Image (cartoon, rainbow over all chains, first blue to last red; front, side, top):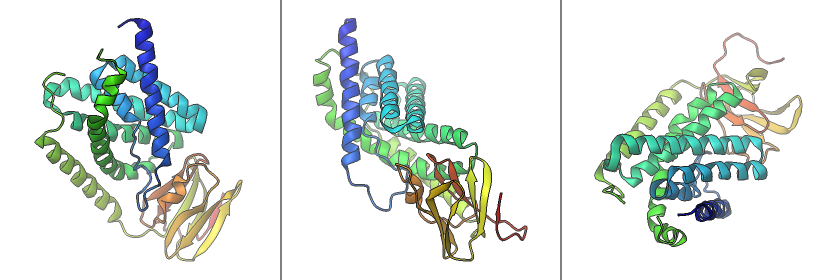
Length: 170
Length: 123
């Protein structure tokens, strides 16, 4: 794959990520769900890049996503998006390296979602300079398992579409 | 792509284990009895402290658009001018150590036991 192809490809996946997160914003907020229970649909694009393309593209998309959040929703949200995205990717890479093919895509997705939440919580704790938010860890763990399963399953469903974007060059 | 499967039976057990662990930790946290004071922090400085025994709504200096409420021994962010309203959605909290956070305004509402006898102070 030449350089222009690689750049265009990353850009298209990034566009998919932005559209997914926009669509998620259109969904009516679910009642009775505590904050932190976010679907994280745009992670589908990052996970696709990580699992089937290469880690460079996945990190590029995570950074671009955070930059997009930064210009649309402000500094704090941008930093949180970046910390969650990077933590999630690093831990998914680590888990894949440790367990090889024995770990399923679904489990990787769940681990990614959990550490997306935990990474954000860690940075939030730093910003607030207090440990009180750590009280929230159990809620975020549960959210990670549920939302990670949902996004992992959705990735499985929309994969043919992603493969079409990739033009069979994966 | 390799021999990695999409999902495996192990996933169910690991997921359940994580949720059980989360539930256990959560119960451990909330087993502590109801708190008696609500403290408002700006960053890590206490700027206001009110008793949970009297129902009231109040604001803190410099944040006229953030309204707190104490009702039935629990406290909450009632209104806030922040964009995401995560603080308001956290709802009423009443147990020791629980907190609600408004990141854009850098305000934290925290429940503490407090036994120094002071009803209210602002500093």
